[in-house]
Length: 382
Image 1 (cartoon, rainbow, N blue to C red):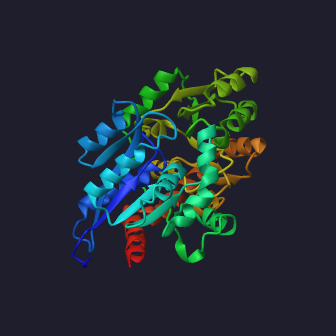
Image 2: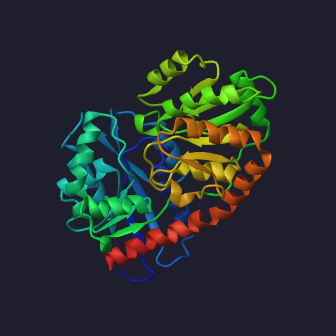
Image 3: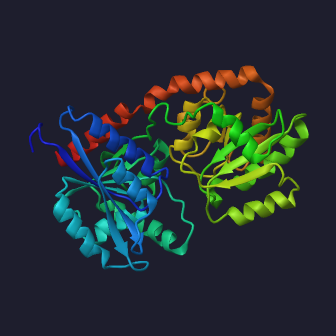
């Protein structure tokens, strides 16, 4: 391969929505397409797994946007017939690099020997297993990741864990945090009023926003619990708006009902476009027990929404307390409430955190991420 030849990269995804794992890939793919003058340029194609004959909207949208994505059809869980489809796609795409995202794709590449004649880079986004199948894949990751040529961690905390717990050599590890396309989270100002009207909020009500999958590790139940104290301390109405879907939805509804604040908690489901909610929000809250380098924090920073977050995983690598956001301990419901109240009550503090967050965003520019990931591909091929 010469410096003029593109590096052909086949990205293996295990999601069929624009999740936190998928967003960095799409940002990189769009950047690569727009900057082919770089040497060597990256030529990105993707594949994902679909149960059934119909393609999800996610696939059609990517193709409409001019991005290349193949679909692997699964008949059931652990369908070993997918190996034949994977080999056919690899033979047709002729990638220089296989780039896997998630425990399922790591396992399939190693178990199928798909990396024997192709460089393999694996991205580790942490473990958020919510079913027996995914817990099994996560357990197999200890074996799967040891076969990769290079492993990318979403944050320093994950890199340390991969080295100490899984035995991945430091020389094969690198850290590359998720990028954000600046301005991607901003909406037309008129939508702010429409969101408030849609939720039936009274005049002067404040919005605390949370965005993410409704699963145990995201700990939205802690955030709902914090709203009791927020309600007690604030002399103005405050609503919690949670955007996302997942297995915890029913339990979260039950928690808000049991606490008597169901009128203050709005579970609005998954949204393709979250930008109007960022635009309407007064505070963004992240209550997770575990995280890597959360895209939602970058989106909140970009939208100028001050942040209260638990200091887990890579969050404390992105945010310094009192500079880019307000940090609390994981599981500290009272701390979440204090942080939310402090930001709602103090416009100067909100502006300080908002300004500090925006200044830090340069480190997450798509150009920075593109250069870093390309360097991993180059060194792996080298």
